[in-house]
Image 1: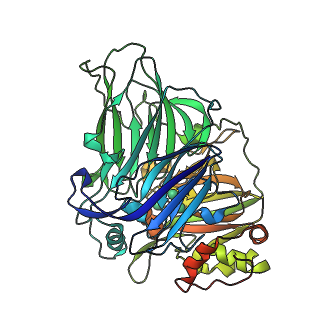
Image 2: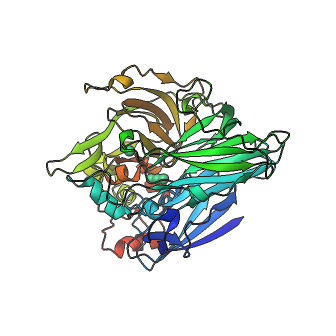
Image 3: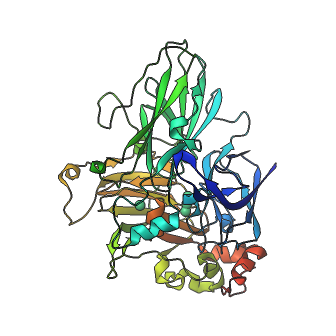
Length: 514
Ligand code: C2O
Ligand code: CU
């Protein structure tokens, strides 16, 4: 089936969460942008018309875009941005069920509102888990200032803290977390809650005290069910949990959505902030009011994603190639703070990396042709890659790989000569079992490393970056060029996409293109 959605992307005035009027980016005059839903096997055609005064692109976060890397969306990685006034139709072949989201991937427009949940349902009758109702619970941060101002503020050597307009509010389902509508539970029923963190920067915790959360999906991958009490959700991560309502009405309950900014010192008093939602079994029933206990409390179990197992029982991959990466912050001689991977601050190339890969013939196998600032790594078709990402810094980073899910193999203390605060020094190594969980966005905690593996079975150009948008904008990004030889033989980039480059005098060479 063909599902057509059309977004006229433009500026909207926004006053959500009690903020003063600010300019934001919505679709068809709406913010929040309504969720998009379809079914496995469908073709989703998302027609984007650009009514902004800058270029724009859309990324379907979590889709693999097999044989269609040019539909992935990140500006200057796989395409030139869609110019103001122009339109483009993204065509998404939906081959995986799960919880995803659509977001802008040019000028960090996602931070200014250009983001929406996307659900891909299983074909009827093929769903591996039974439940009575599907409930979408997207959470996101919402700032007073436009991203362009915030990033300037952050990079500035004289940046003050906290920023002039304060920090973000939390939105649940696109509305102020404080005025969120209750969840209505009927006794004996089972609910699938789909949690999505669409934040630019913030981290959320979710719990529903008095009920177990049975995790069945992370980032579009089904897992063997695992019961927990609470879940941390990093930027860009998704979870589906099954919640069984009590068979009889004893009380009403609350759910807790706590927004954390892991980068704000707790002494600043700005974080965390807990939003309380109601879970109503019956109006007027007494309320079992409980706030989720903090991490570390003995009879409240927070999820560690590394303990999950994929439902398909796929064993750990055996690596053919090991790559060490270090992420962190650099202070340049200009006094500016920027981020890096392996001491390279990602800067967008002049020509989209994909077009370079297509036009360079055999030289496309040499990472140098992509320019040093893209931090490109060329992968051979089907090799199994192990990335060890070392994070000796004091901030956690949600790392996202496009075009794949990866196995989480190990998390442990950072390898570093630097002095690590005492409370982190005893951190133990956690290893996945023989069947490691897969996801597309994993957190490397502060003062830690993470080891992940994936098979390069999807020829294309795939970004790997921190999904805290400020860090991404500060250069914590790199790009994998996967099987450029196969791309040259098989891929034909849509003509209109090449025209977006030509319109801006971006040189595109070579006869393998178009
Ligand atoms: Cu959610 Cu590079 O994207
Ligand atoms: Cu980061």
